[in-house]
Image (spheres, one colour):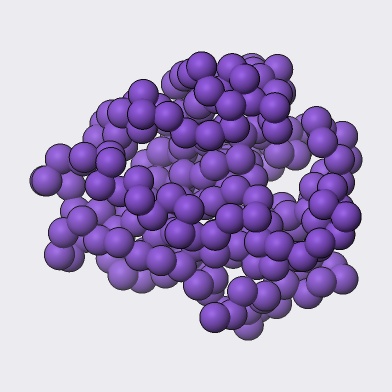
Length: 235
């Protein structure tokens, strides 16, 4: 499997980079909607594969779930160890960000979205979902699209490059529904950082559906039920 389309020195992708490998699950023949679900640091596309039946979506929804695998890259906070990651993390808790890596992963997600449109699924029937790092990438990507997506789900995550969103956001995507969920006992991404991200989005006029749960950096049954309701509504 080709998991290394990035140039290690720059974090950039070339015009000829292949579309990321991904696991796909279709809930019915001839899907007319897609949910693109990005995993967190050190995981891969298999991480959220079991969630599809747990969502118990209405049978009337014909959805293709796409779970891409992040490229391998060195991660600074883990001593430079190479692992699946959407971008480098330079320090915990905020501070300097790997802008090149974030934008490279945005471009790769946009490649996957373009493939779905080529399969007949319009942007308005695509939901971008992600956990932790994956959630940061779907916020980075979904709010900058000239063709708005159906919705964005950012789980246990935060808004990356927040200081650049006002200048870069797409007016067409201003009304995209955003679901943000976080654990009150999350030791990896503090609740304060998630709340600051929510506030930044709301200041710019985005409709944020916020949920918090008595959990650490993880997913719980109540959250899955809330995600299912969000997906059923926006699709």
